[in-house]
Picture 1 (cartoon, rainbow, N blue to C red):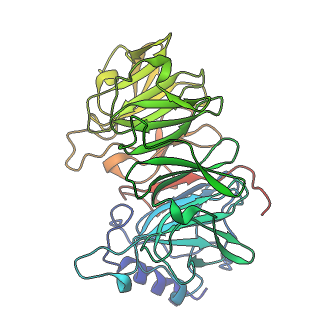
Picture 2 (cartoon, one colour):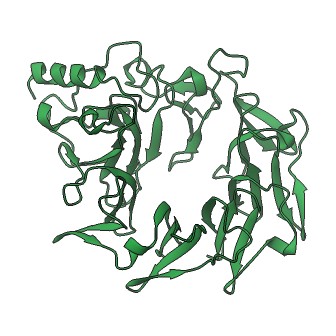
Picture 3 (cartoon, rainbow, N blue to C red):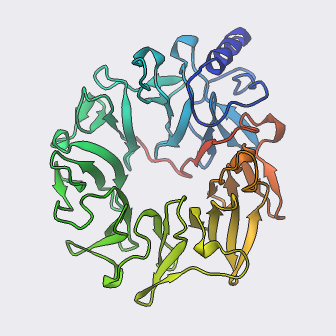
Amino acid sequence: MHPGLRTALAALAISSALAGCGTAPATPTPPHSTTQDDHLPEGASPGALVACGSTEVAEYTAGNWVYFPASSILSAPSTLFESVDVSPTGEVAAVTSGSPDASTPGMSSANMLWTYRKGWHLVSVRNDTDVQLHTFGPDGSLYVVPDDGTLAGIWKQTASGWQQLPGSAQLGYIASLAWSPKGVLTVVSVPQNGATTVWQFEGDHFVAVTSDHAPFAADSLTVGFAPNGDLAVGTSAHGVWIDEGGRFVQPGGVACPVTDVGQFAWSPKGVLTVSGKAGSQNGLWQFSGGRWQQVQGAGPNIGADKIYQFGWSPQGVLTVSDASRCQIFELVDGHWTPVWTKTHATDRNATPPKFAWSPTGTLVTSGGDLGGLWELTPRGNWTEIGGKSSPFAGEVGVSFTFAPTRFVHA
């Protein structure tokens, strides 16, 4: 790619005025260059860290940042990147904040979805480019929910074009898409009767898993799956419920102490763990021995605190991003041990850090209000990934994920 074209592309992206993924970096963005001969990448590398900031999408592999640039100015996304993910086949997908040409005065434009194959390609379902939701199936197929009401239902990208899933147009407003451990598409929607309903696409039609008579039918729902594959839902007012033999029940028949569920998951030992929304003081609870118990440990009062995110390391260590302190802690031998302390709740623009583990077990964080992307070295030190050459240095709110270590064949 000609250096002048690279410069034009960078200027085009940086000049976008719409809000996007994080805050634009204070330093100039490096040129869009992948190798000396500027061959555009096919897609993500197996196991690579893939991230997006306001103006860039790039992967970190073999010690270097590799950009996913547009193939020309005409095909360059003109608004800011908000999130990124990678399909089971290695295809990169990124969401931008919408097209200014599609905006209505006083209204925000809808999101737009782009996929990467030697350049960015705008996803258009029968000329509809407004995207509400998307997901990749286990085989890498792309599923899209259009956003502007022109096209109802869920659409799948096939070799012969976009196909609407049978019965999906009757689901009403579609709130989320998920995949069961067995690869069954699971949908949360609000039909015309106003009851939030969970559906699963079995064979060639949708089956309602919940009913409008469920205690949580008026709630917002988050879908999850128990270790045995049973469907579970986190609700906005009635805690966690699990589908046991076609009947939704609360674990042990005991009411969940966290009613407005922010996150729920099972530990490596199979213990259900629940936290409230990050703005609440519901803390962290586990269901064990037939009863709910608050997670407690010596040191900071994390178990009764505002929980932004929790998860378990590959070694099974409970790890928490604490929204009150804007730091990350691990529960080690009954003690809350600080892990990420480079940010504090007293910072001017305090933001809790997001975290995840790489396929090799390295802890990575978005750095909270410090911005950038950081990794924890075996010696216990934090280093900024890519150092000064990182395109995301100082940028807050970077979206990141890890590509599958092995790709399936499309």
